[in-house]
Image (cartoon, rainbow, N blue to C red):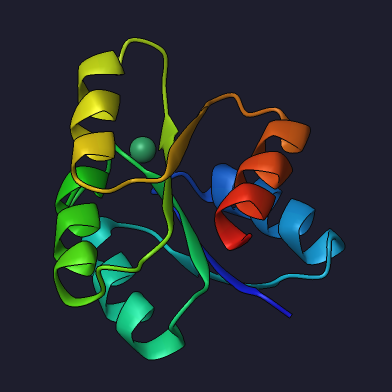
Length: 118
Ligand SMILES: [Mg+2]
């Protein structure tokens, strides 16, 4: 069973994603900011990550760069809002595998995950 880490500072978003992924049989862990995401990634070693961009403490772009720094194979999908195109481009350049625009379409999330998990 693949392990997925859900990172978002909005609790309702984490709850929705965790419910969706658990329902598809994934093992899910959550983090609520970039700092926690880096720590949880080291401990949980997820197979893929869904990462919000705008978060307190450390944002998704910083967390992405830090995680890719110690795990170049990290499979990270960004969760973005409309109007964040420049940040999405930056994320892809920093190694993000894909992005999903919020409010997310559950099928789009599952497709992105299946793609990165191979
Ligand atoms: Mg946010």
